[in-house]
View 1 (cartoon, rainbow over the protein chains, first blue to last red):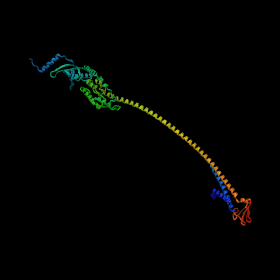
View 2 (view 1 turned 120 degrees about the horizontal axis):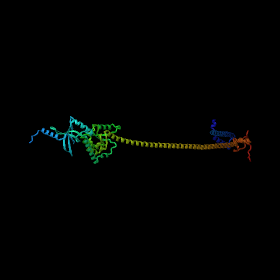
View 3 (view 1 turned 90 degrees about the vertical axis):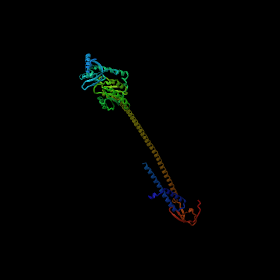
View 4 (view 1 turned 60 degrees about the vertical axis):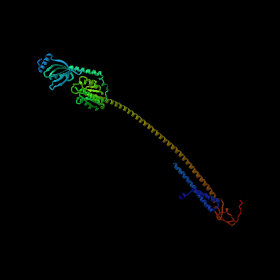
Length: 67
Length: 438
């Protein structure tokens, strides 16, 4: 869980954008490209999951308040 | 010359002569000039006839004890006084001449009615004179003091009447204090008039010092005799002219004395005088009590009135304060209601605001989330687009020289190429290089 706690959505997004711009430069080897894409994909997944969790948290919080 | 007679012969001759020529007895009117009793019971008198104080005739008289006893008691019982000097009498006398004692009369009888009439005549004369001089009612013009507290008394200290008076005054039921000062006087007999007048003069002299309210003349007890002094003109005049109202209590049983007549008020006895004085106190006390009662009634009425006023005020105060309290309560209640409604209103506003914020926030969150999703989708698409496998899957290949893509390098014949397909890594050497015209 500590990895989840240390997770930063904003940093992740920055990293994804950084990777995309590196990919657009197109001067990397295919091995590097491959590892970058994998990293970015996993970050995208984490961010999506973070968004989902956040939404759930919010809904849960408001739901509790209304009861 | 006649043969001289011896004195005895002469006196005997006179005696014979008198006996031969005079009647056995005569009724004679005369005034008693002197009068004295003898130890043996005889009375020795001197009879005189006067005109304007000068003596016209005079003779010695005697009453032998046996006769005297009868005459005296009858005289006293009828006239109310003893035989004494200055009295006019009608006497039956027989003339006697004694060889040794000379000429005298022997009184055999005295008619008391003559003396009585004489006395009445004299008394009437005095009354007439006093009336003529305006002295009869002079003392009556004084207004009696309401409360005679300082009383000048003319009496004899050892008279029973004085004792009665003092006893009555000092032991009165109501314990009134009467200040009495005694001016001693002889209350009967020859000395009485002068003594009484002297006492009146002394009282007049002490008047300012002692501040007397009233003069009282009292006697009483003992014999009802020798009260002629109280018919005396000079004494009556002195009383009439005194500066104090005079009350008498001389105790005449028979009739009023002239002193009684000129006095302001006549009472029968000293006790009655005391009672009269005390009645003045009592009347005054009654008057005061009447006033007190009136004051008391008035005060009670006032108190009641004030009481009512106070209780009305109390009532008013109570109702006013109750009203005030009620008004205060009402105000408090109104304020409470206002506070409640205001707070409920505020709560509603705040709740609406919160609701608003809440829904705003939800919207914002969902906006943020959807924006982030869009952003992530875009990033995903970009990644997909840039993923080399996407090209490789479509059949494109990628070629590198020494790990660098060849599109950015200058290639020449003989360079070693590494080509990637979806499933293969192909190494080759450049044989020819031509320009791609497409």
